[in-house]
Picture (tube, rainbow over the protein chains, first blue to last red):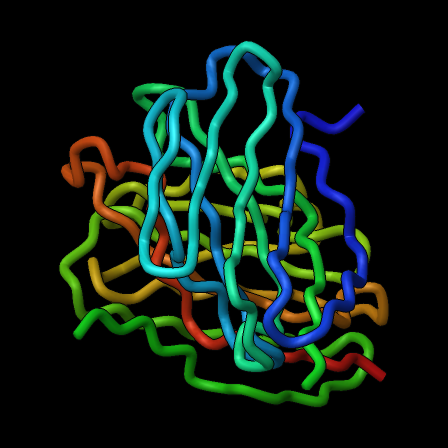
Length: 111
Length: 116
């Protein structure tokens, strides 16, 4: 079993839908949780960064961490075709600068 | 603006050739990384470096070596390329002094290598 599990999709939704992307993990030492977005033929870029449990909101994006369930989510409201990309979750324990990545979920938002 | 530059976006090489992938960052970051990304397998860490002339093996170092002679430059070397090294290679950098944002990586745009 991988330390971080992420459904690869693809997830196809209509424009305007609410999207939920999720990862589960097994290492209870993880404290820092990240979501990266990767457009086709580009490198990943950091989208959201959260520490420990709770929610963090940035515009149409909300990152949620539930450490008791070892489950993190990224919600995208009012999804747009420009949100079509691969979304990778990543996490690190305290004191480490090497994240463990999920395999990424491919999201397609069609007009 | 933060920038990690990979010199070659697309390369085609023959089996047995020596391949150099170059990466330069302009953020004065101490840490640099090489990943490969394959469909269904996600990102896999090949090597990383936390200082000039220092290197550490990642999860899949076999068949690769690295060089870091200057802080801003980190090179990935395939001594004798094989077809199973056909992949997207991503360079990244980070700063250990980023406080709570340690673990935040800045990626280059990738080098797609095809070995025939």
